[in-house]
Length: 226
Image (cartoon, rainbow, N blue to C red):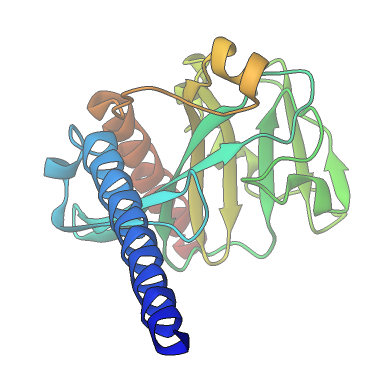
């Protein structure tokens, strides 16, 4: 009798293991399908594009080469704001050496801590010069006036598109952040589940972001060489 119980227990354990394994595999396939759909329209912009799902839910990324430069696109789901629906944000990053001596973070309509930015951790708020977006707030890790604002001002016309949220300039690279989608009110309001449906990142808006970052980098390099 005890041997029969052991066999029965082993069978149950195997069945549970198989069920869990299938669940994990199905989740991986769903995440892969989500990543493929998300970057479907922009993938062809890049040489050697590599897609991957991030370690946390709502995080996916594409890495590749555009115009000879390494680029990273990364999505992050932001659920930190208690008064707004969750947003799916896209960080377009150009990792490269930039000849600036301080960080500059320009955020439009900042409203508390976000999951995609360290804006709130920069110590100094700068006066926004004429020509910057009306609702832009500038912060830096240095108190002194930011020397390259005149150059940067010439490359922020992209913020006429209300989807763009942030520009980050650092010695290690440049980044633009834009909103891809807002969560379904029905799912989030009832289930607190941030679902965005069958979202695909717009190719034209990403290309505009890439061209802006490349032009800004070139202008900063030229300015400091001169």
